[in-house]
Image (cartoon, rainbow, N blue to C red; front, top):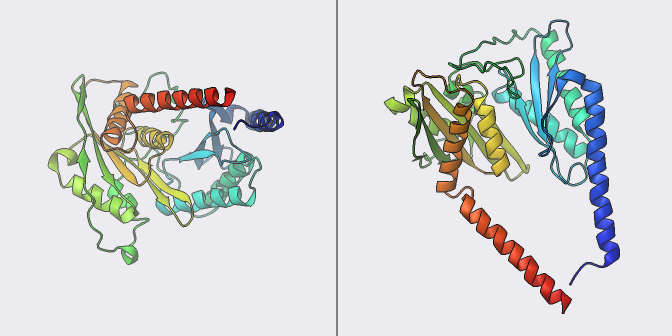
Length: 331
């Protein structure tokens, strides 16, 4: 049964109102933050805000990347990513929890300004505390000459032991003997002597993430890779939020891009690791394409996301169903 005309008008008016709220908020934030506000993709509503501790020579900097879904702010939260080379483990979880609390306390309202200022408050506290300044250095073999990487924004990840990083969220008191999840390996991609290969494992706890990484590093070939980029997303049923993190392992911004892909694909409870063996020839931006293609291929192969063909078939079925329903309602 089709919606009454008056209801369709109300729905359309509601959609227009939500769209206008987004436009108003974006214009306001652009005005407030000036050059620190960056439009990544206007069509997909992807934006970055560079935030620092307000000092003349900032010590602490973070990039908040957000995607505004069609239902934001009335019905859906922004999809967000926190990018900073020093933001790991407990620090990441605490800040993410703070943002979630702000969203819950302000349901249905525009919250990006509140998020930005909360992050700035945390950075100011770190600058005023005895926390050592972040040790920021470039470690990737490749640096894009144009410097136009939207994920970069003047800071680079630190090359740290990814298993050591997970110790922040899997302390000894929490460690329990959990079964090692099955690990799957995707087909490698080779370009100009560089080889990329993705590995995938189902995970439901950070401890499992750590165990999988430890197991992968037992493989001498994987351990010898120039970079082992990883990202994971674990859905917490009780809080209805995601526990997620990523690691560049020296390949500048690759971990954030991989996690961003997993967010767009909306995959749950999975760890993806992409190994890259550098062949001595610079690939430029193509390296990110290969990393994400490897990851997507293995996610499709193990049924975490539908293949392009299946998505097209489903879209066709949905169109046919809508067309048939329309015909029935016309008679």
